[in-house]
Length: 235
Image (cartoon, rainbow, N blue to C red):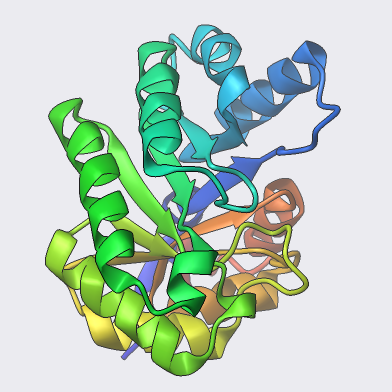
């Protein structure tokens, strides 16, 4: 079943991303200005940039999305909890955290659930959107399914395919699998390797409701060429 979207609606799918280790304050200012110019939903940044981006975006409806436990997820729960609280205190109103992949590989899903519950509770208590990054490139389908089942129970706002720093990023197959498990209970974010309009549209067709990308401007300009005489795009 297809749906008609305006260009403005599709731009709001985009989490405009700069997670480079050497990103300067000027880079952050540029990222935020671009997000405002194109009316993207969020800027995705390392948590240390939360305060600066909150200042740059204070008069806009663009969200500040802090990456927690990034990019490996190899921190204790207490460390991730502190980083989450600190990012929120500094102006983040969305949190994208990376699960502990070691515990997934070892089959310790009680740990994963505990970690998720603690971080999601902090976000919920502070009226902040929570996203759980699986990093699917390291996981098999049963592990992805199990993580989605836990998420369906804990109810973060989103589950997310990838950090963009692994050996591969989002795939349509994984987006479809994640969405099939969580249904309408949790939303799905696709991220990693989404650099053109065809991939962007494919992710949305298969259930993604947010797209993390550093190519948002390029994709937006490609989408603009597809707008019909009625001002919409069918996806």
